[in-house]
Image 1: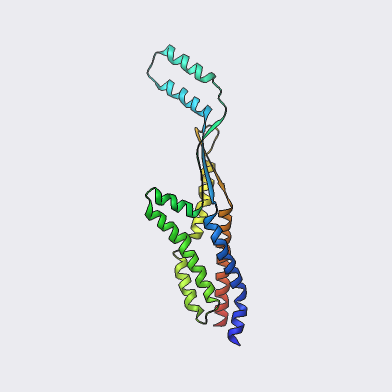
Image 2: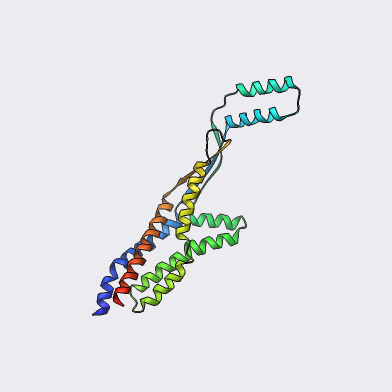
Length: 205
């Protein structure tokens, strides 16, 4: 009777954990963020004017060049960098560029460990010795970087947008995509399911 009651109490965290595991898949495979860098034509002209003023040349030539560049009004930007990547795509790029250790770290801490954690928690919903599985999950949680990774993406987004200005020669822009929101949803649901399952375990004991 007790076993049946425990399984009934664990039904809610089980559903939450299964849903979180399902969200992890698009969270690591779908596009996460787009980083763009554009070159301002007018800013290049202003930079050229500054360089001319710094050159050691005849004053008349310098004045003519400065006046010419100062009178130029060039509109538009040129896109010089445009990358859209998922978590797996980022790890793949790092691997191809020779940063294999970093790629492995991303895969282990942001993909493998979160998946193992979810599997342990789901197994704990059916196991009589759920305490052992919950302790193993607690140990893995200290090594998981899913929450840190999500916050890192937010910081990168804010930093990229803050670095852009009308006077800058190179403007940066960052845009979040569905993969980020899937991944954040996984983090939230996984944490909620873990806490609910742990609370149920304490109540039983």
